[in-house]
Image 1 (cartoon, rainbow, N blue to C red):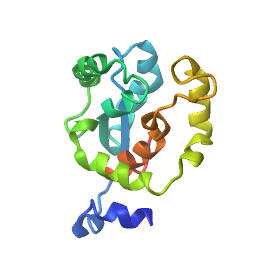
Image 2 (spheres, one colour):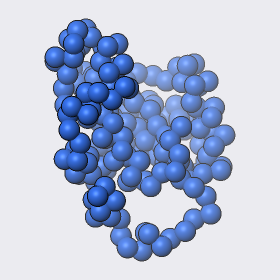
Image 3 (cartoon, rainbow, N blue to C red):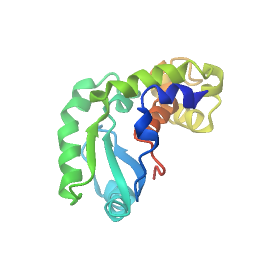
Length: 170
C-alpha cells in the first residue's frame, strides 16, 4: 500500500534507471550552529561515505519545527549556517544539498503516509516515547501537550527517505 502512494511521486522511468551507487540520505536540523559533537558524531562519517553513495544532504527545517515551533526565526536563521558548515567539510560536487521545506512532494507524501498510521501507534513508538519523556517541559509530563508535528516526526522521516529512494540513513 505504501509503495502505491510512493509511486505517485516517481515517474515510471525512475523505476528502471539503475545507478552504480546506492543512495544515502543524511542531514541536520538547523536548530543552532553545528559543533564538535556533530563533527565526530556524523560529519566525519558523512564525508567518508559521500564517495561510496549517491548522497542527499537535507537541511531538515520542517523537522526542526516539530520541537522548536516556538522559535521559527531561530530555525530559519540557522539554515544557511548549517549549509555552510556542511560545505566547509568538503562535500563533493555530486552531493545534493537541499532544504526540506523547499520540496513540496515531501509534505505531500507525509500527508499520504499519515493517513496510513494511527496516532496510537505513533504514541507507542519507542523513539517518540523516549523523546517525549526527555522533553516533558515542552510537551507535559505525560505528553498531554504533544503536537501532531512532533508525534508525526517518524512519518515525515519515512517521506524523506522515500522521496530520495535512500538505501541507507546513517
